[in-house]
Structure formats: structure tokens, C-alpha cells
Length: 161
Image (cartoon, one colour):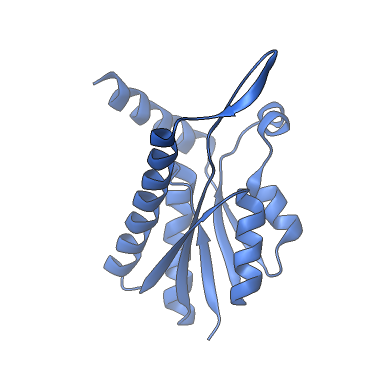
């Protein structure tokens, strides 16, 4: 049976895409796989050689990725769509495409941050790279500007408390 891959980083746009992935899995009777890709944090600064963070921060990255993946699986199962998860370390776009190829997925579902051209130029766009390199169709769920602003306000309020 073919499956649907939901790629998530836990962001608000990924949360919106999760709802679409769950509905698609239920409507098509497909298995739902959740993939979270994490990366070893690297410190860089002007004039300095990049250096890896201390081991505790690496463990925090893994732990956060695990929490994101488990939360997505729990939400899917609560909605009636059985799901599994996998964590991978590395470049997000490359790992998403590799997982899709290895597992013969029917479709990849993911969110898009909605960043402007300048920020995409600086940090790249995972969704754009996946669209170009994926071995199957890709559904990119975008947030509208008012949704992004609402989520940013929630985050700011939570950080202030």
C-alpha cells in the first residue's frame, strides 16, 4: 500500500499542513508517515570557523524533533488516521526526498513558512527544494498572511509570560 509522507518541523505552517495530511490519508486509506529532520546546530560568526554546539544542545535538538513527531502522530491517531514517525538527521529537503523514494510514498505533504524573497535567499526554502527534487507529487500548504500574523502574536504572548 502506498503511503503519505507528512514532513514537519513543528512550525505553524506545518501544523496547518498536518490537517491536510490527515484528511488525505483518511480519504485515500493510505498509511501516514511523519518525518521530522533535525540538524546539529552550528555556531558561526564573522571571522570564526564554524563550531558545533555542546552535546547538550545536540540532545535538545533531537528531543525537540522527537516531541514534534510524536505530537503529529498523536493528532493523526486522535483524528482516526493511524500514523508512524521517523527522525532523521541532516539536510531537511534531501532527507524528505530520500524517505519518499525509499518508501515509495504516494504524496508528500508539508507546510511553507511564507517567508519573503530576501529571507528565502538567506536560508533557502525546504519546500521549494522538495518540489524540485521529490520522486512523487508534493502538496505545499501555505498560511495566509493573517494566519502568520496571528501565530506570531501567539508566540510573542507566550514568550512574554
